[in-house]
Length: 118
Image (cartoon, rainbow, N blue to C red; front, side, top):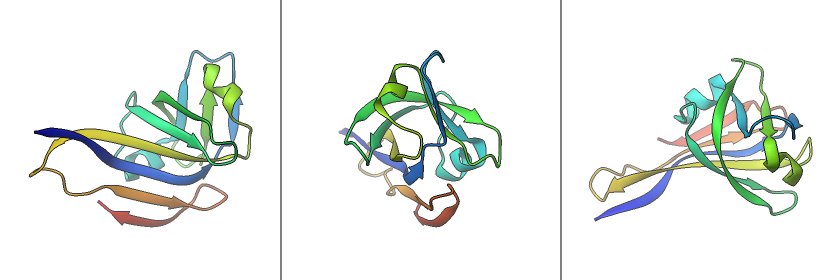
């Protein structure tokens, strides 16, 4: 049997910008994406800690080292600049191949404080 399990999570990142006019997606600093093991165009679930909203979107890389977390398109109406978000990526695994998830714990400036698992 295969199951959908958490692959990686960026925990408590800060939204740095939003743009309703953009075609959609979440922009994430490429360095953060790589450390989390999240690929460009990958499906992610985003939870806004400030207001409880959740939405599904796909990732696009922002400039490496920029510390940007940018919510675009319709989802931009669900967040505010400065909100804390949890970005979750999932994979489909067999019981034998799943080795747990990687979690990046972020500070207020979107610096990685700690990496757990992975």
